[in-house]
Length: 254
Ligand code: HEM
Picture 1 (tube, rainbow, N blue to C red):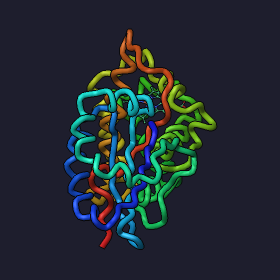
Picture 2: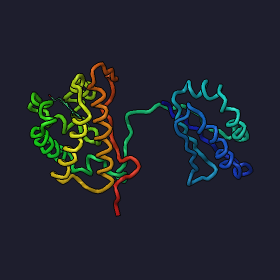
Picture 3: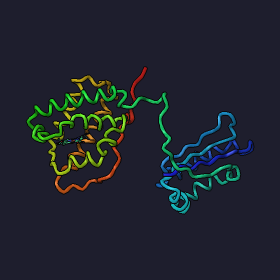
């Protein structure tokens, strides 16, 4: 992924049609498989200045794929009158310096109550698991630290510290713990049900937005665990720990 910035300073006589031209040109960006995102912004202090930000799958995809592909002619026809107004047109790579500011919605981890909330959740969950005829046999030989491991996994997934990745080896390790276990659909569903019962027991937030995001992850994660645990399954062995967010419904704050 690479981010292209194009900075424009458009003279007064051409300013009128500039945004409309880009609105039309954007049709070609929406159709281009090489383009992931685009955004045209206008300077607040000097309305003759614009910055166009385009996220491309790669610089090569932009320069060869898009420019050499079927969408370029329509795009260029719209923006050609403004080419001489370009002050900078450069590709940028991401750096590790990225994040959300204090005004952004809290993570699911923060909303739930931090690590302590996930620890209590997992303690309640495994009390139920060990008393459950369908699940108890699967966990009969679990590590004495298993409850904590799953708590720090969930904490990391929901936006907390990367403890599971650092201490436990992240996704590859979690995957290996499920391989070959032959989890059945009945066991998967029971796992979800007991997790939701445990969430009620320990009073995880019960607002619709949190529970929708939380149970969305449980559905996704357990279906993957089931598929990965089947004989002959060949899932990706290297991947980052997934990060789960609010989705389309961030928390309601009056
Ligand atoms: C969202 C879904 C799930 C999550 C987040 C999850 C999380 C984890 C994690 C983090 C581990 C590895 C702990 C370690 O580092 O040792 C693990 C192991 C395990 N999981 Fe899951 N799991 C999920 C679904 C399931 C389901 C549906 C089942 C079975 C019904 C299951 C059965 C097991 C078993 C048997 C182990 C190994 C326990 C042991 O003997 O140590 N998991 N799980």
